[in-house]
Length: 288
Image (cartoon, rainbow, N blue to C red; front, side):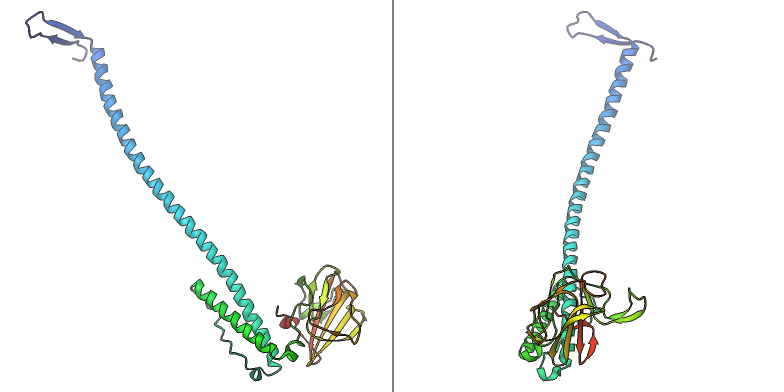
């Protein structure tokens, strides 16, 4: 059947000559197949177009959601950074309050009428950042109240070691048992070592009087101060001494320069605090 020709007969309405056309089978078969292929192709294109529209909408939605997520992540990161800073600040203030309270206990804190310090449990995580910020601010206020109370007793405050004796970084060892790098034997390191370049100023940590300037085998050039009320401080490994015995000094006054004298493996300050003749941890008397 498909191998036969397709015949088309045209009969005019005016009864004129009838026209007959014979179309070879290859042509009309090809035409039919072409039309079918066109319909299939058109359907496929329509299907693809619809899916592309859906995909584009999904991509636009995902892009928007991703932008919102990135914004929230960025905000969360900033909040966490702020939270970390605030927590460090909070811990610093509570530590400073504790150190000042330790100093006050030597004089009878009750007689100074210090406002009570109600510290929260540091192991509890504060849920809201605003609450943490408010708590830190309260600690700042209470710390300032304690400092203000001390300032009402200048005889105590001015003669109590309370600042860093030099700039630089605290390096090991601290106030602890160590193995002596020169003898290899265990001994108590009764002070604080602060590493700093040679020539860095060393200041008095409280008002007092110079009671000793000289060289010692272990600590090289040393300056010792008597601050009264049982407080004494010592500054070792100096390169230059700027005061003399019997001289009165004020807190923050330069008394010497950092050096490497004595038994030392590098320029640093060896700082000691003594209370009633007993050497104590100097970190308890650094409040700045």
